[in-house]
Amino acid sequence: MKHLSLLFVSGLLALPLAATAELRTWTNSSGKEITAEITALSGDEITLKLESGRAYTFPLASLSAEDQEFARNWQTGQAALADAPAPRTETILAVPGKVLYSDSLTGISGDWKMPHGEWSAGDEGLSGAERAADDHAAVMKRAQVLKDVIIEFDVRLGEASRVMFGIDDNKDHVCRVTLTPDSFQAQKDDNDHEGPDLAKPFNRVEERLDPEDWHTVRIELVGEEMVAQTGDLISLGSDPLLATEKAKWGFIVSGPAAEFRDLTIWEASLSEDGEKNISRLKRRLDVED
Image (cartoon, rainbow, N blue to C red):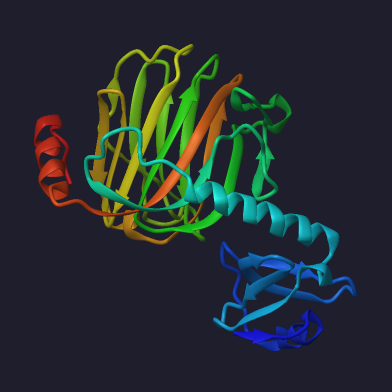
């Protein structure tokens, strides 16, 4: 580990750096910039890591006020991750590892992007609604690299016609789970739109979902397998695209407001009975690979 000033580190900007989900631009009090990932904040010192893997530690006070606030919020978030619970529902495919992200959704942090719709947060959680002027569903997504994961959150449909949790790679959409008042379905998405790739909907479960109730949704992605569940409703399938590295993910709402709360994402690995469980479910639900 090297100790030096951000002024010196800024001289390393000539190194080739490709943007990743964890990287952001940091600015010191003199206006010098560096693209790096925060890895530690201890007392009054912060450690940033370049994509090259080199890490540098320097005084937090040498950064801009905005970056100091970001670093302290990151530290608070790390503490919350350490206290995050295990999944509240029983997994089918995967075993949870370390927590990658956890948010009660009672506030909206700066790393969420909201290009469409009206989004707000309060004690009940996150609310999203389509905005007529956008001519587009409400979208709120966060950039973070994911691979094999378990994702769990609560949703209340309210008056929304359709609610989705969507996952993208750096190119386009990868997969999503869709809830309507009358159905539940997972799918592999169209990843090129102009090429040969097509969306691949998995089994659609048609059953009434009370719009006023909270529904816990769990998504498991391991390798080429995907399984999604809410209550007793299960939708699952396979596709090579599902094994790709994911770059961003989040919520999509069509129509008036839907609500979300208690989002947690874990690293995942295949469970001992995961393959057997998936094979058994595919036979029972008549799902083709």
